[in-house]
Image (tube, rainbow, N blue to C red):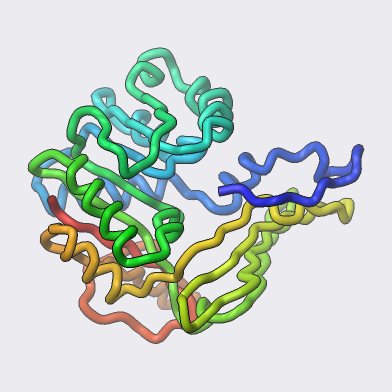
Length: 274
């Protein structure tokens, strides 16, 4: 979801940058994401999924990774921004071979609206569902997702939290050609609403401020599990990341859990069966 962006000066690195490409490089890891989604479905259902729907798909980077995985995989990406869908088609879908392109469909549609044939998996990643700020609106989305699944379908989302997430904070991550900033400008503990931005800074000192802005509600894990159950999902499960013994950092391996750790910052997955 884009926000108002400060215009960089002509001729600097920021002016020649592409915010969607920067986002994919700094925020997404579609290979690991699809590894997780694919393995979770197999573990839950004892079979391999073929048809995936990516809600809030943006540039459809994840959908492209899905169709690359197996010859028979198909993907449907839903998003309400035609501009972002067009970018994704030009820069991601067109890079696929012709057979892969024929197995992916990008649709400009609200994720709550009915769409086509029931699918094996629906995913809503990068916390996009947090744009639904009330319990009723989030439940309505979860109900719509459930209705879009076939009888053996699985729904999966990600979530983040930890005590560092419940306050105003700015974090930066250095990449080779730019620095990524996550800026949680405001957090309201009464409403749970948060205003967040993504900025980029370049070696020549130029900046792309507010490349993306997110105005959403910070849902807690108990709330998400409860609302998924209220929407009729069964076997609602949280997956917590393990810890690398040498570095003390996350090891990228997520396991089902009933209790977590009081980490300052964490990211988890949740799944529910239709």
